[in-house]
Length: 61
Image (cartoon, rainbow, N blue to C red; front, side, top):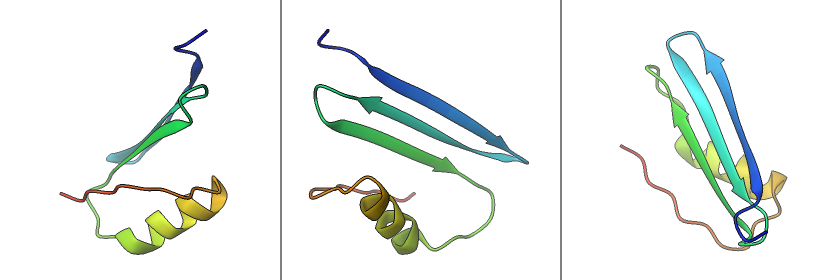
């Protein structure tokens, strides 16, 4: 199927992490919601390494 994939949500205290993966498109979306500061560059680096990504786009807000 064209639109097959996985999704996950990890609830955290006052925060959460959402992950959506489309297998055939070789695409994923990781969303980290948090009320505390964290190292965005480290989160990107860990995600790239874990998923063996060659291309990424990231946005913080």
